Amino acid sequence: MDKDLAEQQVKLMRAIAQGDRRAFEQLYRLTSPHLFAIALRTLRQRAWAEEVLHDCFLTVWNRAGTYDSTLSAPVTWMTQIVRNRCIDWLRSGQAREARESQEYDDQHFAEEGSESEAQHDDAQAARLRHCLQHLSSEQRQSVTLAYYQGMSHSDIAAWLQQPVGSVKSWIRRAMEHLRECVGL
Image (cartoon, rainbow, N blue to C red):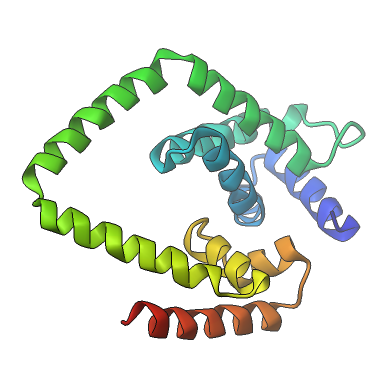
């Protein structure tokens, strides 16, 4: 991690410990894409990851005063909170209840939709996967981070350690290719 970024996050943590809401908002904007990606990768359900991330940021707000910059960087401390909360979520009955509820919703939705719609959706998804495979690795990774993880161009640039302009170009070219390939 960039040393300047880590120092900025430490300052933000100190301000949050004093109750500074703007510092909290700034820390959220800096770290939430990374932390959400961890939660989503662990839980594999967007709604669960969103809920866990929300709980984690409440914990950060409430426990910012206990953060010790000599032990770890703020993002490391917050990553551990997210991982622990994800594990707790998976072990709890909440995950099982949510899964059962979702299975019922999925079955109900499937009964309402026609089989031809499902086949059409499957065909479009297969076509999109095929088209994504023909992108360069930079384009594919940038598009995936932008559209599946919800990361901004600047977040992707920081994540990939590349200039923002390059990321924007990769995404623009990838989208042009996907439009042609998928047929939109």
